[in-house]
Length: 231
Image (tube, rainbow, N blue to C red; front, side, top):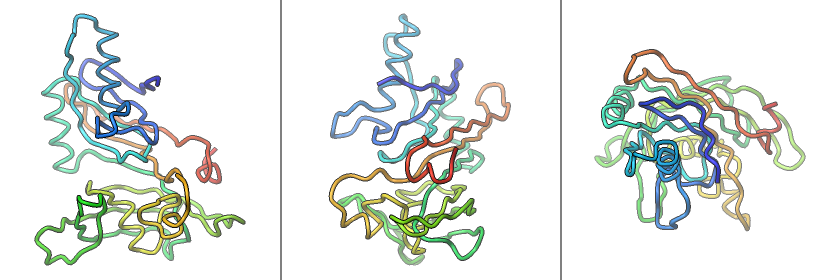
């Protein structure tokens, strides 16, 4: 599998994570993004036998789009702090089933993760194990399809990074993501794998070394259902 590098310098590397590729090694032992980045650096810099690569953030295995990796411990610490203080910005595209009542809005929920079944759910604020989840969304367009009824493309600005956050919050609002076989009842019942329509399209952060504002954008591939909206 060839690594699609969007940007690279001595401190950071921004790359495209294809859908179905793990962010880091998991129990499947399938090729993962972290291993691919390390292998790339070894090839480009033969003297670096065991190069440092920091996993700044993760994307769920079914999700494609932009990821950033740190090439030094200092860069990793700096970017991780930006994520903690919410100056690291992430935007997603998602195709949801149905059409939101409002053109834009904010979801504020408390999510509780169940590690045993690898799912999360909306819980009470009083639950001490539940974590606050916030996102903003904007409806870009809606289309009426013969196959799936009304589908809507939404742009999502993620304010927190909770487990399955986008998928859970939209499902809770009766706008489940197309292709989601965990939180969309229609697709849970379908046999076989369907690629979830969720894509990390934008990242924005302060460069850990020279402090300039860095913005990167990558559109989803021209595949259904994104092909209904994105050229």
